[in-house]
Image (tube, rainbow, N blue to C red):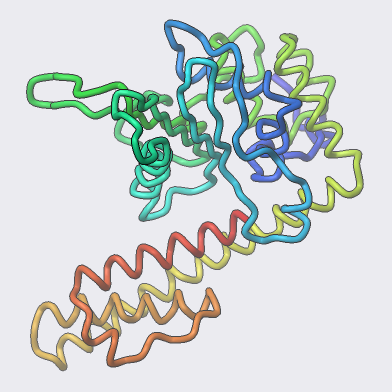
Length: 320
């Protein structure tokens, strides 16, 4: 494995950064990289040979728009529609969002007069820098519509795939890295700390060599490096914000408990806690505070939903 002295001169570019990921896999000029990554994850009986990127990478978006598109939408030569994204953290509403994105791709296919039989398969892919399903060791999980009790597959037209990078723990000993997905996972996790020569010695195949070249280009191009550094700072700020939220939520729980005791019912404690979280999240998002009367009129379920939406917005803002 590489020593600490060998790491300090690394490229310093994290491939899981949204800007880097979109530049590498969302540019039509790099469709070969996207094809290779998709085939590594999906392992289809008939591998993908061609993709059309439906929302091509535009660098100016990242320079001027904090809400730049982060996911990659593509259509392969067999008509499958794919939504691919890199996600740093697991938010409370992430599962619902993945379902929503895939469902939008599915529902957006048909227009008036079209037949349901013309629907193409829809596949959502989320690559995660943190754990979403710590209860299982597998790094790649596939979710489909099926009957669990009888093991009946309803359809293959709707799939969601998750790839949890921390579960791929191959070391720097090159011979330990086997399948293509393991190699991508290794590169995503180790590229920031190693230099281009070390990375190329580990992954001599053409797709990884091209990816390493893109990372090297970003590290040496002032404008691209500036965009990358800005996004990294935003990600660090988001991490501090989320930590602050957790501390404030603890205080909100205490406040909610007191509120519930004053109200004199169990629901009051939970409602007070949810309202406290909403207040904190709105402050962090610079939202106009929701009127007390409106919050008081919401059910506990509606308060939970509002908290989840605000948390997801905060997370997405930090990733943009």
